[in-house]
Length: 181
Image (cartoon, rainbow, N blue to C red):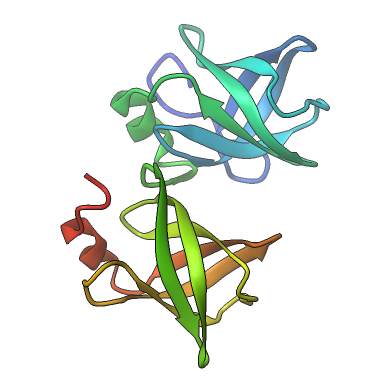
């Protein structure tokens, strides 16, 4: 962030901040940002669990930890929610994700005539991440049944090792559910 409160863009169009780790300070090209964490590209080789600080400009240091690494991408989890003013500044140069609400809620997932149980691990206004043994593929339409409410319709956005990202088709419907709080 520059002194005038604007985000600096990286070569690939995302916002550029610095990540300070035991290996020193490295440029971090933000791809997505939420109050809970960020994803992006970092040249340094770090592993999950390493404590870091994300430097937003000269005066905003945010303590965090590396959550996951899939070179050259990595995910960072902030120790405390990111301030709304920083989210607003960086919303112009990277994808700002809705806050995820962690949970462990058992539901039923069905698609193409098959059904199985699943556990919702996190949920936002626009989607959720579930764990299920049901083999689901990118683009597949699913229904998520929660209690006695009408099922939520969604589409698979990613699937890896039994974890599946679901984008809700009627995202506004999730706002009325008590599951998010």
